[in-house]
Length: 586
Image 1 (cartoon, helix red, strand yellow):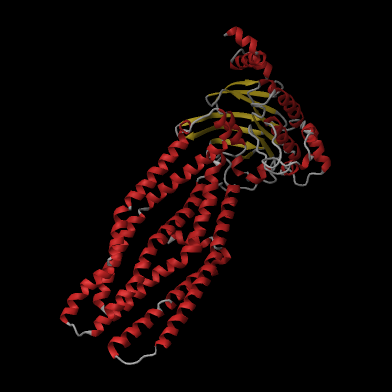
Image 2 (image 1 turned 90 degrees about the vertical axis):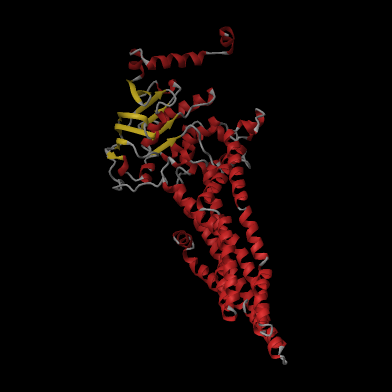
């Protein structure tokens, strides 16, 4: 019942069409039963009274009720489709709205294929159920009640037999539908296979270059095997109940005759019982058709309810907690402070261990360290991507958990290692940072970010579209455009997460020029593995296994002859390494 309420809630102001569909379907069911009344009357007149009767009259009654019943069924489907499309739209809107309001770590832990399938495909499943199966579901609920009521009126013996057959059939159907856990595992395996298939297709270029086989992609292969296993388990589990159900339903006519035979033997002149038997054999075929409908309507109902739950479950663990105060006017400064901050992705395995540091307003703090030392985690905690940390993080003296995320993002820019540009024009991509930016401001931002040459070589300039129907830019060019967006946004706090990683020397040089301009008079946290970018940082912290092991300026850290000096030596060595030296050292 709770699942049904959730589903109905998505109809919004189209709920009247949902209820209208139910009412019209019920009315259609009643009208389509009237022809059976005409058949019964004709059989009765023929066998009991032996006198003339008006076939035309009862024929018109049957024809009229069929036409009206089909019309009501058509209107019911029309209403159910309106409700179904509205549910589908509202589920997608809800999914997108919740996607915009989840904590940012959601995007680190959920693949795009999984998110797309959960929102899009589950919305389609609920639409299919409401639009196509809801009228049939009403029909399957009402029809057996009407059939049994009529049969009890005519012959309680035959009615009891129909009840036994119906109970046996429902038990078989229940076994065929399986339990909720099986359905969840089946849908989960299907979802996982779809996600892995999406990632496989996205990496097709690399697959072809290395001529990799499917076996190389263990997760994809395993997801196919898991789906195959659950599909086979479900299929094999329904074999016996499916066969039993078919036998029971198809043998109903024979069973009726066998049960009725002793009564006919005892009272061979009981014409009324004979009439009821003939009518019951005709009427029972309708019961069989409804029992067969229950199987697929029940299955689709289970899938629709599970689809609603899966949409809720996708975001459940990532819902943002509301800030205690709306700190829209409480930033007196833009310094960032970590006070005894500890954080773990997995309980018992700390990534950060009681870190404490302060980034004064208008200064640059660089973070260096080995892979897995916690560099990116600090950046994501500072930008409120992750919550659930111990200790205290403050911006301008305000605890981070009391700062509204929208307000925080209005004052902070984050440049990732991998930049995302949308399949829109370059101008549209840039204006995402500042929709009100003037042409003059955009031109200045392009100049400051070393992007003018990128725009000049494009056929349509800023109006050039990026993506499959436009042009493709190199990673370095995309990163420079990302920096241009930050220039347009002009926030007081900037977080840079290895922005020059995997960039060619020319783009690295231009990015460094752009960053030198960008960080002026800003509060900046920079994560870098190219140490040339941070030589002028106001402070540098060196991380090892989630702890600060060294802290100071570039020169003071070199004088300590510690980890930073070794990192610097290795960096210098790699910068001067060339192929000839590699051959000589071989």
